[in-house]
Image 1 (tube, rainbow, N blue to C red):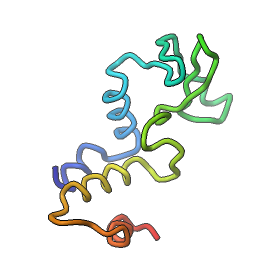
Image 2: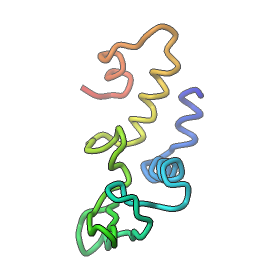
Image 3: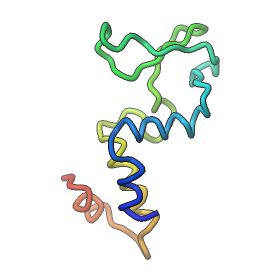
Image 4: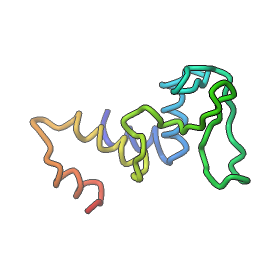
Length: 106
């Protein structure tokens, strides 16, 4: 997949999140701690923590990126998806400095 296809498939953060949820949960979200499917989205406006889920069995909260390589990142998922595409499409290798330049990061 080239960069243009990646940008068309994932034009914004919401598209990246939807793709990650499809790959990870296949339509049935589950808790990464106890693997229960009795989960619900938290009230995002009241809590101020967007994108969190609550498990009704173990009472833990989690994000859709919990337990993935994207856990705890401050970088947008779109940049991560572009970085993965650049690394997999590199003919020989890709230095971290070149990757940072390509993605506009310092």
